Image (cartoon, rainbow, N blue to C red; front, side, top):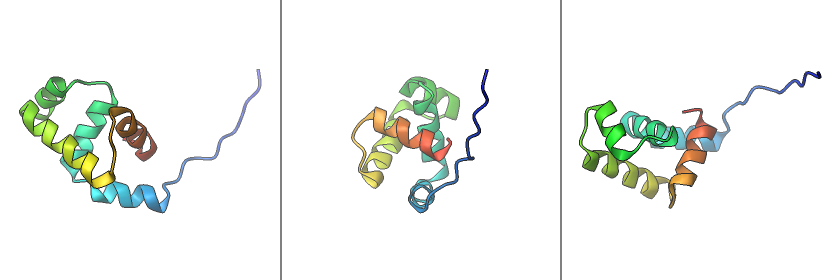
Length: 81
């Protein structure tokens, strides 16, 4: 068995700016969706309606020019959410 050392991930300026562009509740909604939760599951967990969750995710897409859930998931992973 071999051991490979990997340098810890440090946020780039783009990732920091991206995280700052999102409100805390938008980040939370993004975290749930990236974890595979449905809109309804996310809404229940956050104490919101599914329509509010949908609004948060639409705002995220508009702010960051993202079109798909896969892109949102990649973003959440890169931000460490």
